[in-house]
Length: 399
Image (cartoon, rainbow, N blue to C red; front, top):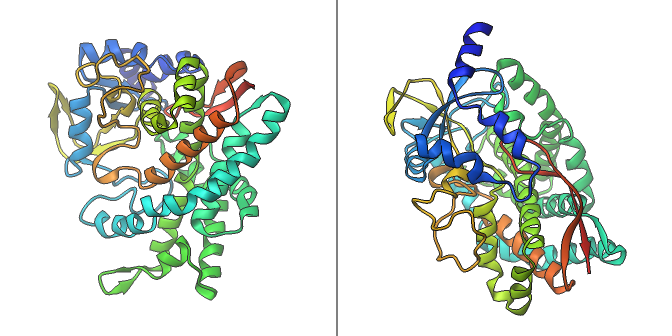
């Protein structure tokens, strides 16, 4: 088996090795990573970190085909334990009613309701860094996104540390390891989160409130209420996906603005440009560069034959830098004509929390720009791992 894996690795594109070599550059030179491979063929065989083979999908058109075709490229995989996490690890028609419930509970209206609280959080969290004139922005983004998650779910603001501690065993980028042992390890790390989610459900069943957990308990699939397992899985999805990607996107946006003082000046002079700057930040450095799908049948994509049961990884970051779709893709251009980016995916599994994430990024940038005359990267920064672009550290000087 080891000889077979070694042979596969020699024949395939070592994307994870190349990624690790580049990841602590600012900004991440994604076109340097994806460009040559995409030009040779938009669908490339790769070797996963555990040695198993998979397919990287790099062209915008091909990424679109994979994301929009859940029949042939399925999300029904158990990446986090013995049961699938619904609706993330399900496809239509099963997926549809669950996603409809989350769309109702997490939407642009909810983002608007949360905005004043988020603005207050940002101001308080930034003040110590402004007083010191420098500091690491990672803890600020971590606390902000966790406190917003508490507000969304409907738990006391003080419990953000409880959620943080319950997720401490999770390792960024580990989802790229697909062995049975790795799945068991991920599930073991989730046990504290599961226990916390169980507790929230029991609290709201005894004492309903106007929050997401109560909304889940009051929701129905057809004429029946959600089961306890269904409510738990949907709440787990929100708890697990509700802050890490937003934190990463927020830090990447600040990094890009820190490296482009001319853009900072434009946004200070005209804050109405901030939403389109957020979209360009998401395009340049999306927080999640790719997610897995499973081929449900033999299929040909860009001339490559993918066999039933093989893993397929559409790379959102590669689609966001495809010169066939984006003119001058490596240029940070907040005047770029509005076009769809893939930072939150596309189609059935478009990130349900995208409205909240966009709002948090917009408000954070508004407050940071309003409270400074300039900011720049002057200390160290370090990324966590692949396929995420999250940060362990991002040190700034603020004036």
